[in-house]
Length: 471
Image 1 (spheres, rainbow, N blue to C red):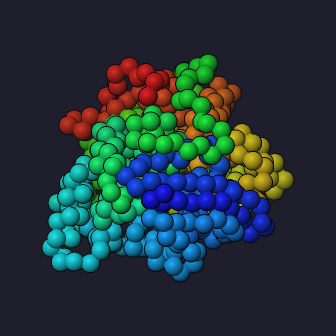
Image 2: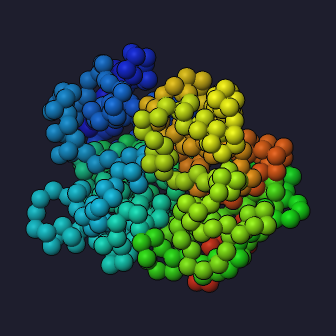
Image 3: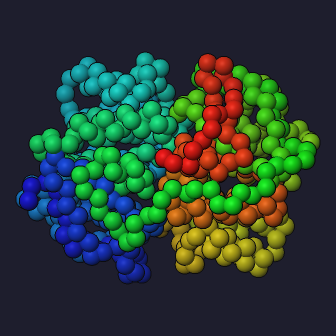
């Protein structure tokens, strides 16, 4: 069988515990294969194991890999083959982009040698195809991009060289519907192409059905989208979070994104913010969290104005407002085990004792749907979806009044997303937790009390049209 063939692949961790396998995976030339399954079920580990690109702590102990009928042995030969023949988009694209390189330089990494002018033209062409203005972003660095823009830059790097094998791990997370259609067009061009095979790891069943010839399921088939449970009570009473004429510019001194946002969020209220990628949604949340300086305006928490910079905020305010960003790998200390990650905010911000913090960590692990043994692992030993849930649990460990959540379900299968959203609903009802959440997922937005959309022309937030739970 031509194309990419993996047989009997087996991946274990340092202790010899099986992470995935033995499994078989075939991606024929001209075909697009979608790999699905529950978060933490080993999808990414299987694909990276076949590519000999596993992170530290995991190793491949069995299996054979063939490309166009020829054996690709593990070790140096496999890594050389990967560099020459494969394009890879990882789960954490923002973390995979070198922070000091420009967008143009990053995309050029995905091209073989040749005249620089032609390579630059190809890089700009693929950026444009993915909805990015090359003239505007070519000289920016990763910290000057939104999450969706960084995702598209990483995708451009993976596909610009038209690799023989293209591997995309959760390519739709953090993308607005218009950009998602562009990704689907790129994959459609590879279908039927001689000598070209594609593997897509995804939790999005609708996306898989549109792009794939074959769907391979690891473990259970993820259930449908996270439709609303019984609604938690909407916000009532005085606002716990209030934005007044808040204006933000793009990171790195870029153009104005939002010119004056007025918003009040009440205790127990869930407000979702939707809109095009790069329109300022994530930057707005970061400004509220004190991680991005606003150009103008104020943030008020429980009636008191919050300092613009997080470094100037006292312990009570740090506890009250917690932020979960798009890049959990970059936010979690790589050498700290999950138990320590969760205990720290409970001890420092909520005044919990060591035992109380540990008990809280154990409870949160279960509440976000993670297995108990996760508590003793470092972030590098977790899947992308597991890291995302740890980041959520860390924010909740501080017992906040306001949770700022940026695409927190994007790496989760539908069952895990429902577990997290149900937990937030329970905390809204029991403790009055206010949630301000950015999402591109219509099913997630459908659970909110209010949905606001970014109007790029007016540079502000407006009430969104009614959102259906169906994707």
